[in-house]
Image 1 (cartoon, helix red, strand yellow):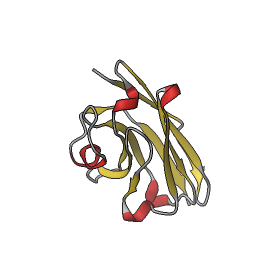
Image 2 (tube, one colour):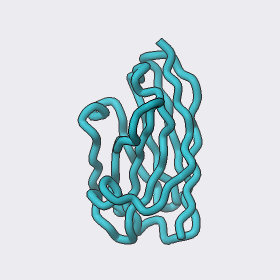
Image 3 (cartoon, helix red, strand yellow):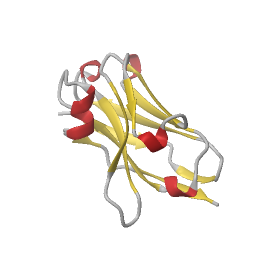
Image 4 (spheres, helix red, strand yellow):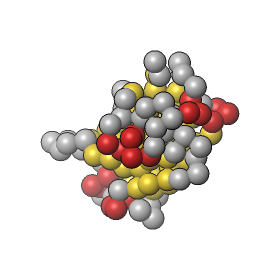
Length: 125
């Protein structure tokens, strides 16, 4: 069982940056593909970015490419989401997720197994 805890959300002006962190516990973190999702008010949860358990491959939703960067530090059992050039439409609750043990990057995108409770990001115009 993997527990995930996000942090780093907050209020930022349009054009600003935030770095979200997700701390994992309860499993062999380095063997889980990880991802970030978000859910805006009144909308469905959507995939943001994913990273393989080795960290060598990343994948982004089209609207986040070039602005968001996912990374991980297996020594710290943590995954991060650096968000630059934030827009008001990026306002959402951001969730950290883990895929299946030693699963592929598509696994965390399509069938995440573990979820954090989320952290709110608000971008003002």
